[in-house]
Image (tube, rainbow, N blue to C red; front, side, top):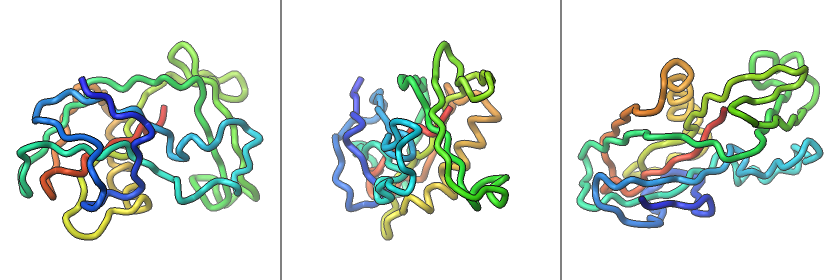
Length: 189
C-alpha cells in the first residue's frame, strides 16, 4: 500500500497540480488527511477570524494513475475510513447553517473523540460516522476551487455517507487529464 501524507495538499483540483506520485491501476492508497480548516483550530481559544482562509478545504494528493487516458472511467473503492484524531472541531457562525440567522458571533467548540463516539456538550454522545469531504479528479481546463468543491462533490459525498455505509462503496468518475488529479480529504464524523 502507498501512503500519501497529510503534508501533500492542494486547494483546487487542477490539471496544473503536479502529482505527488504515480501508481499503476488497482493500487491500494492510504490518504492521510486534514479537516476542512487544515487542522488550524487546535483549541477553543483559536481565534476564528485569525484562520488562514487560503488553507480551507485542502485535499491530499493528487495521484497520477498510470495508463489512464482522458475519457476513461476511474473506479475508486473506499475500503476503510479510520479516524485517528483525538478531537474534532465544531464551528457555528452567523448566516451559516440552519440557525445561522439566530447567531451573532462565531463560536468554536472542541469535540473529544473517544471509543467510537463524539462527546458533545451537555453529555451527548454521538456515534462516529466518518465521511469523505472532498474526493475527485482534476478538470481538463479551469481549476475546480475549494468553494465549488464544497457545493458539488463534498455535499454529495456527505449525503451519501450519512444515508449509507460508505465502506465498500464504489465511486466512478469520467477521467480527465489522464486521471492525474485524484485527491481526497476526510470530511467529518
